[in-house]
Length: 110
Length: 113
Image (cartoon, rainbow over all chains, first blue to last red; front, side, top):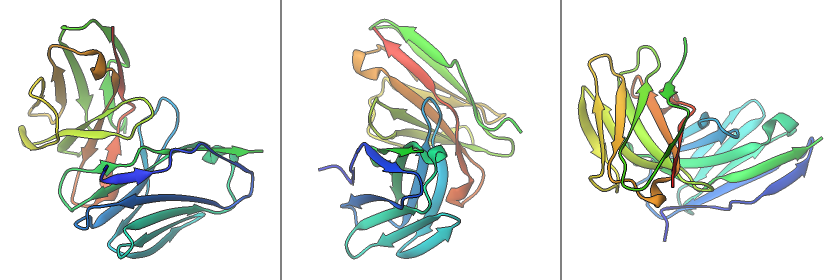
C-alpha cells in the first residue's frame, strides 16, 4: 500500500465549476499537508500548505485536512481554463522528506 | 531573481552510462532536495543536501549520489543507468523552515535507451 493515494483522474469540468480533489494517506505521523500544481513540462508550484487538521482558504482555493479520517481535500471555486494542470498532494512528518500522491489531471473546459 | 534553475533540460543516455544533472537554488536558499518523477507518477524523494552534506535520503540505491558546492548549487549523479531511470528529475530549494519557502525547478528530462 502506498503511503499517499490520489485518484489520477483525468477530471474534466466546465468553466466556473467547483472542483474537488482528494488524497488519502496511511501514515498517522504526517503533520504537514501541501497541494502543488504542475503544468506540463514544468516543476510543481506550491498552492497551499496546512499544518495539522483544519481548513485554509486562499482566494479561490480551500484546503481541508481531516487527520481522523486521514483524508485531505483541495477545493477550487469558479474554476478557470488556466487551472488546467496536474494537482499533486504532498505530506511530511515535519522532516525533509515529502511524500507525494500520483497527481490528478484536471481540464477546465471554456 | 531567476528562481531554481536546472541543466540540462533534456538528456538521452544509454543503459550502463553515467549522468550528471545540475541545480542552482533560488537566491538566498541553502538547502537542495532532489526528486525523481516517473511518467504519470508523483515525485519521489531521492535525497537532500544542506551545508554540503547529505542530510536525508529516500529509498534509492547507491547508484544515485549527489554533491553540494559551497555556493549551494548541487549535482545529482546516477551511475550504471537502467531503463527504469528514465524520468523527470526535479530539484527543489529551500531557504527556511516554512514549507511555503520551497521552490521547484523545471526539471531535467532523462531518457535512457
